[in-house]
Length: 259
Image (cartoon, rainbow, N blue to C red; front, side, top):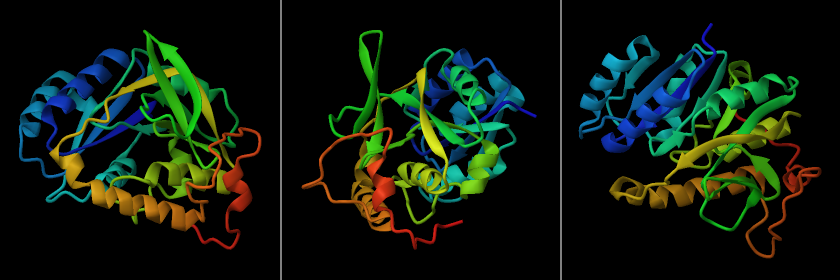
């Protein structure tokens, strides 16, 4: 069995996709596959994937959507097609630092089965919702919390864990699904831990596509807060408590989680 499946949704970001694929090729040592889910791109994405296929061979698999269905459904298509023992996802504007994914696997392998994910550090430009920070090459990389509970924006997890949690909730379109997945893990009695020194360089690149998704992203965030009955921004105190995640104390116990 392959050690790792990397799911990579993309749409009309051929230049960023090329950099991401190049970074994976240079930085990942374990036996792995890359599953690119292309949301009906109309730019040079096909050319980039054709070139990458010649370089990567069978390590690269491509799923092409007839029309873009959003990041969440695209990621789920990749998860369901994955063959690796472990899984993660990357945005097309993200690049793992050398050894980051291998280190995350080593960290996960050292954990008991009740650890759902180890969270890789990434660039996060807001000063809100910060759980942990680390420094590398003069830059700050962070992990975030959602109302006091650590979540993994870039998680490394066992494929069996993803399957147990039902992958992403497809009521979300472009965002909200990653904190939701971690909350599902906490709710199921599992946990999320930091993967120290496992770092993802993430641009959060703003372009016309992202701007076009902005209203949908706001609605996704509203869905997340409604689903988990999260406290509003004010008068909520922006504290992170790794021993007693506040979210777990205010979850509605009668909640029926999506499979």
